[in-house]
Image 1 (cartoon, rainbow, N blue to C red):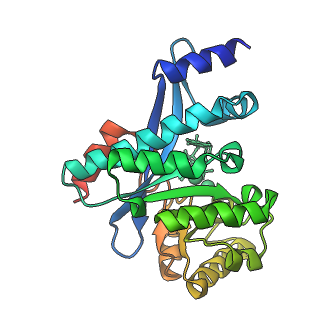
Image 2: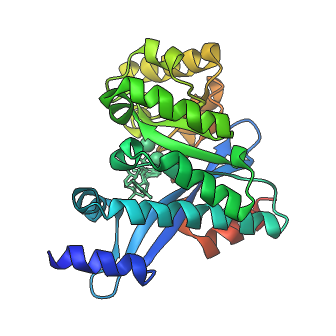
Length: 254
Ligand code: G
Ligand code: G
Ligand code: MN
Ligand code: NA
């Protein structure tokens, strides 16, 4: 209960912070976008990771104001980078399960984009397979609404959930992010190599951009590059960084 009331105050007092991790084009090494990842700078407990407070936020409904803050903050930051004349960057925001069933998602998102005058095609929303499969009919409706606004949709942690290949055809998906558990042991583990290769090939034939997550080592990058995996994300390129540090990285990468 103590943590709940302090999380409520944290949102009001702006104790939440966004970290940014780059997504990199495998072929060119160019940073194509960033994923925003929330943290809580707790006055006594220090920097808390989302796993330490997102579940509580979901249970208590605080995820609604929290997510609104995250979306606005992430969009404000890419607009700021554009204002500094850095090359255009996409920004990916993780949606929570609760947000995805909430009726206000389309409205709230449209409002943020309009208020900031932001190009909707720069925004990517990440959902998981379990969120999609909870209610496939509802999912199609929401995704079509977001697509109509120009927003792009990514499936996060792909491969560990329950979606079937037919859903990829049914749902308007733009991006698949291969879960890092498959990338961890490539090259080397024959099963993980085969799965990774199959997901990349499927993405190509369905015209869905494939991003490999959790790339930490040069051998992994080489393996993915040989399969023409379009984009990578992971510690090999950069850990998630506060906006100030990520800005420096952007200037260095011009
Ligand atoms: O950055 P890190 O590895 O600590 O993130 C842990 C988990 O928290 C990941 O599953 C990530 O998707 C999730 N997460 C990070 N930021 C957000 C956010 O803004 N909203 C939601 N709903 N989940 C987030
Ligand atoms: O579920 P989602 O993919 O949104 O979660 C992203 C999480 O993965 C973040 O918590 C981020 O800190 C973490 N992450 C990002 N890159 C790497 C990596 O290369 N290795 C590992 N182990 N974790 C990573
Ligand atoms: Mn994600
Ligand atoms: Na992921």
